[in-house]
Image (tube, rainbow, N blue to C red):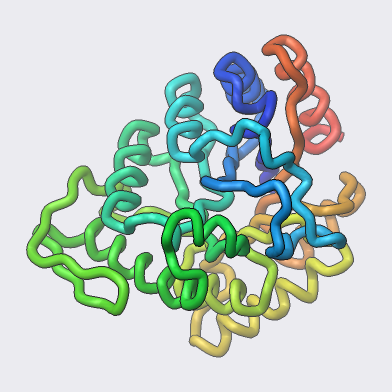
Length: 287
């Protein structure tokens, strides 16, 4: 099973010297992919419930540094040559899809085809309000934005007309390197997220999932693939565990997980951050 690392862009992981140390050490020790998440806005007292913790609260302080994921991964791409890169996840309905299509394809070119675009619908009504994007309908908006972006990646000139976005005979270049196909990973643990992964994406990213719940989530994903006549093994299945240990790896592989994503916060300073990655590799890649 591949092992990825979700550790860039927040707090001490937002410092350039730490990003460089984590990225280069992760590549040297055999991590398959670097993941980087997104929030444009955090608030001190959110009314919205965070869906990835038991208490409904996000663990990141509202005043923490949180870098833009596409810019963070561009920096990581410049100091590596083999390790894959992915947003985990970019909150697509908060963005202009034409701009994201341009940025994602640019990053894919700069990293020589190592990039996958992980997307999600978002959960924070306060964040959407600050960005002046309607919170209601964000799932439909995400689905339409993906369709529009894929049109931009594969057609030149490209035209699209939908409920939320439209353009006529435009050229957006560069194109992604893999024949205009940029892998899209859909994030989220809900049944709706799994349906969208099966219908629209090249993979699924489950975040902070209890190890005991992984087989049931994957069964839903497999069922949604079967309903659409799609082979389950067409999808990559990446999971970040909320309670995992290396002893869970065989059972996860048997359930259909193709990548375990280790989530953590690097310590301050490049030397300590590099040593931290080395220890993670000893634990998860070469136990």
